[in-house]
Each structure stands twice: as structure tokens, then as C-alpha cells.
Length: 301
Image 1 (spheres, rainbow, N blue to C red):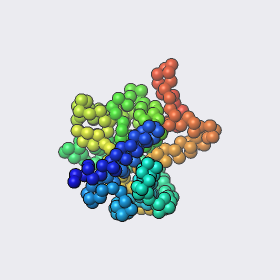
Image 2 (tube, helix red, strand yellow):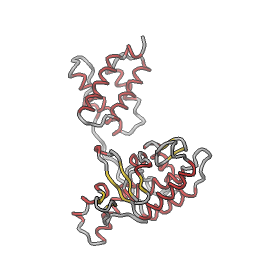
Image 3 (tube, rainbow, N blue to C red):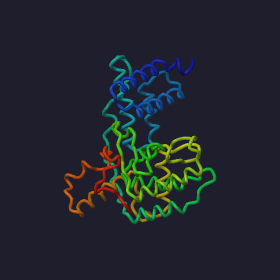
Image 4 (cartoon, rainbow, N blue to C red):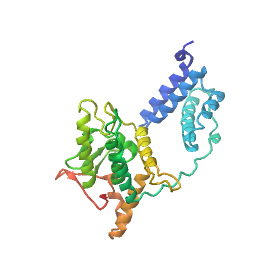
């Protein structure tokens, strides 16, 4: 019997569940990824459907993941099974209490401006590979954008050429967290870095090849995971945090951006309670002058 015939009921329920998530306006990309991973395991193991035994065996394969990731993935499958239970009274439903609770996330590791300067200098000295002539410039720009503009790793990886206005120094972040888009103005120094990267990119990548801003190779751009691994490798190889308890996470650049902005507001005598609503996450374009609105949170190094 083929896999499609054996897992027919599972596939039908999965399609209906994903369609219902879309109809409710909820993000289902990760749910779909996890369910397809689960489906692939059931197919390899020869199971006809999800049962307590097959679910326990699949969940044990996640031991290499962190506790919170195991819990999140288990809850995604739980929601899927709960959806099926409401339509199929005898389908398997995991016990909610068996997943446990979320553990506190590790506190961010502070990143100081001098450490960022040294990190950029190290990234600029690395020798580009034969099939990766852009990785040095791409890593440097990714660090600059995350530290000076507070961008998330995925937002940087998903940037396209049309999202970057190097003349005005503005980035367009398309459909990010909570399905929101925003304009992010760059500081003069970050704008210079963007222009320098675009000149290097134009020398190696034909514009018609693809429209990803950051390129891992000349043929395609970065994925969020690939960009995170690349920046993490640069941070680890630099040796800047060799004596620290741990190397900062990639997302700690966003935390460093927020801390530096609040610290600067205090030093400049601003009303900190009224400043956060005008943070870079809510930037807008001035309709009369067609340029980004600026405020005290503009980053420079």
C-alpha cells in the first residue's frame, strides 16, 4: 500500500486543519512544517495514522531540541489532534499535562559598541570562498542592520532589493511579526554600509538572477536559519567573547539596540515614558517630503 493511501485520513485532516488556520488569519507556516515533519516520520515508520505509540516515538526524536522547542512542537500537534477530535471522536489526543511548562529563556548577553566594532573588523578580514564571494560583505551588513536598526534575523534574511532604498537610507520590512509591515530609516553610517554592499553585490550577482538583498552564494539568498548560523559562526570565530560565559545569541543584537536607545534617551534628558511609541518599529514615511521621519533613536557607531 502506498504512503498516500495509508495516510489518507491523516493527510485529509491536516489539509483541513491548515485551511482552518488560514481562514482564521493565523500564521500556519510553522504548524505546517511541524505536521509535515510528523507526516514524514509516520511514512518512514510505516504507521497508518497518529497513535499514542507513534506520537511518543516521534516526540523522543526531538531530544536534540531545547525543552521549549519540544513543548512548542508538541503543542502544535496537540492543537491538530484536538481539531480532529472534534470531528473524529476516536482519534488520538495527547495529554496536555505531559508536555510540561515553558522554562525561562536565557537572559541576553550584553553587546557593547566596542565589541561590535571589533566584530565588524573581523568580518571584513575574512577571506571569501570561491563560490561565496559575497559572504564577507553580507555578514558585515547583516550585523550592521541588526545592531543599528534593531531588525530581527528573519527580517534581514527576507529583505529584497526593492525593499532597500540606498539613496534615502530606508528599508521596507514586509509582513513581519503579527503580519505587520513598517518603514525603517537607517543612520548615515548604516546607509553607507548598505551602499557599499550594493556595489559589491552588483559586481558579482546579475540583477536578474534573484532579488534577495543578502546572498549566501551568487545563485540564491539566505534563509533565516542560514543567516543566523553564519552570523553566529562569525561571532564564535572572532574570539571576542572567549572569556564570557557564552557567546551572545544573534537576537541579542536587537536587545543591545533597545538598551542603547533607552540609555541614550536618559543621557539626553528625554521623557523615556513617551519615547517608545516612536521607536523604529513604528516608523512611517513623511507623506509631504517623502522621506523618513527621524528621532533620537537613530543609531551610529
